[in-house]
Image (spheres, rainbow, N blue to C red):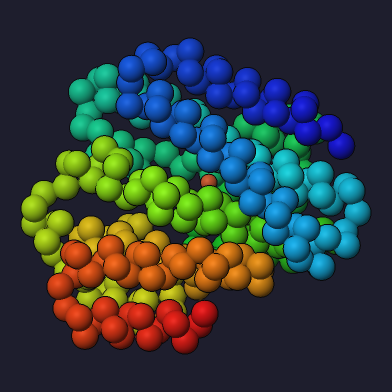
Length: 276
Ligand SMILES: [Fe+2]
């Protein structure tokens, strides 16, 4: 196991992308953010590993695969930023480049071509970490994987990456107020900022389901989506951290500034507190 080599390889992907985007571009900051985020996801993942018996008791080979998946889970974001930067240069609006490509698939294809990373226990996490779990279990790839000897380990690593990714994003959203500091918040219309939680999003939350970004209609939806990540945490220690960091209270307080219906806020609070 050699983490230094992984870090060097990872940095190469970052540097190759950084050379193609001017330092003062929004997309250059995206690259920097994704680089820091990936290191943080590796750290959270290692913490979960150490505090979860079914992961801690695995051999060094498994831990190596898990750490590679954690560090490289968003490697496709670098190439995605380059493609979005070039598209904006060609006159396309920044918001219209949001769904330009699937960073999971880009990452999957990049590492599939590198012998030291071409292992489904790594690649599966790259492709699926950002998708809904129901889409994962309904996929052809999941079906094919089920009959292989490394199915269980693949799922352990996918759950680890998903948890670590959310813990890193929760921290940034709370400590750096990332939801309101990013460029998209500044572009939101008063209508979207003042709109309440949309009905579909509310119903999904109340049935303890994760909110997907494509269903967001208001800024309030975006905040409740962050709270809903709790429903997708897999390991006990991840849920414990969510509780210890008071994420529910913090984002509920923010939510009450945008969704001005105290009865709904109480209902949401009861729903999440029931789970904590
Ligand atoms: Fe991530």
